[in-house]
Length: 353
Image 1 (cartoon, helix red, strand yellow):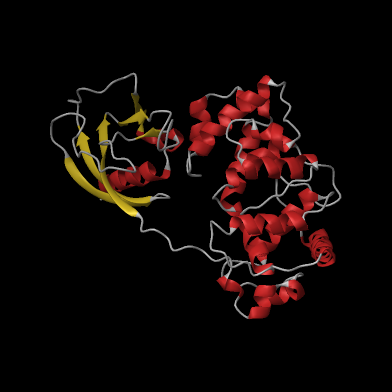
Image 2 (image 1 turned 90 degrees about the vertical axis):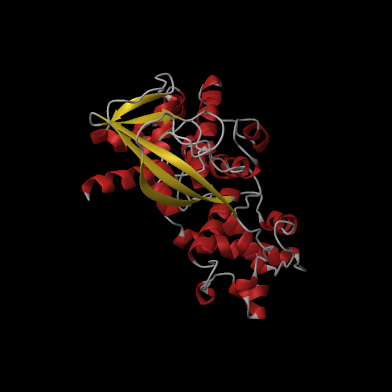
């Protein structure tokens, strides 16, 4: 990469000019020229958006902010209610960190720190989230690099060091582009450009306000950037979930607070995890019927989950401290993660056939 300070400034100015008329209207965002957005809404949206699309996040964000309109309300909420409201967004450690952070901010009088350093000290806020909140909510100069920004910058300067090693060069280039004032608008402009024009596949270069500056476009192969290292094969795991039904209710358990899908209501299972298959052993003896299986993909492994069904009065060995009988008519309100919701639909569809 060999770009002058003048070219860097020109890129930044042209991008911000484009953003003035093309900024996406999002429920957590203040449009260009408007007063700074509520830090609570910026923080909440950034946590939700990690590894999740804007389209998927919007209904969750609107539900959360109606139910818990500020950080004090979220801090006072029952953890189970928050986890249930999060169900379906995935990456459930984010929800647990959300609760911990809300409580930490509430303990500060409900006021978020206004610097990257202060924000990094809060539970669950990594470098990216702290930079995004500092820039967008507080107008601090911070270098914000998400996947969209990473892609735009890698293409602008044809940075060909494979990720993740290439992140350092991309971050340094983004730092040179980030203005001293308006860093929040700049970051959001980069995000919008990456989302709508400089997309992973079939980038719309003819509509790009930075096309004349883009080295990857000039090369004729913008889709080659950013260069990604070869993916390791995803491991495969097998487990079993158990549908235990009695008198119009199903037995659900609360998963441990730490670990996969922590704190969520779920069907009991046989102890599968990211490193090992499940035992296949049911929670008690008796007549069990195989009801099929569901497939689910996690970040580092794929899971084939068999479903075994037991119906009847004789249900021994169920611990009331770790589970409860949940009415089938209210099953949607349990807030089970997607994996177990799939298994529940399988069990219910079996009854209908």
